[in-house]
Length: 270
Image (cartoon, rainbow, N blue to C red; front, side, top):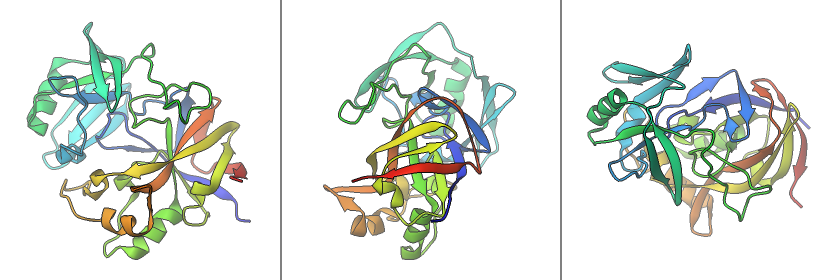
């Protein structure tokens, strides 16, 4: 059996904006450090995503010297804010079915985002004392997560994307699916059959396949929509009337993950 290796690590500090590829990352109780701790909300406190604002794909994210840097891919305009920067304003915001306590970041960021996204909006941060539990139907130990779509990690095998690309007229990258962890040397969709695995002493539990929506049809460089890969995926990855790709994952333990780490002690489902 080939060794399975962690080949890519991604975080998405601001929900629905561009991700960052890392060589290593600290695993916290909520998932990877800085992953989806910020989000953009509208005037009613509802989160905004690429599903309704595909132009969010045009804003990249970077981290440097304890600052988050947002940059527009087409105009190269940018703005930054401190990782620990917030105002004293507390806000209740809604992300999917959950209401969470968040902190306002600053008005300058709000104005920049409002202009670039053409909607009045605010940037907010989820502080450590804000709680958002994983769906109790899938949780193992009352896990707390951040502003993701519900789970601390998303795992996809390289072979799964490779198989999908053999079915598409134009190949796509992982940026369509926004995984946190990518591994090599597995079979296509092998991650669907894992009950647990370990990386660097952390135990991981794939608990639920990830349902996909029209967001995966958005070109992350142009913000243009297409029918793919949703149409092709729906032909062979549809379960219970949902299109699935990737695994939502829980974890136990805190450590550092590095590209090149071996995935060990894979326990298949019965």
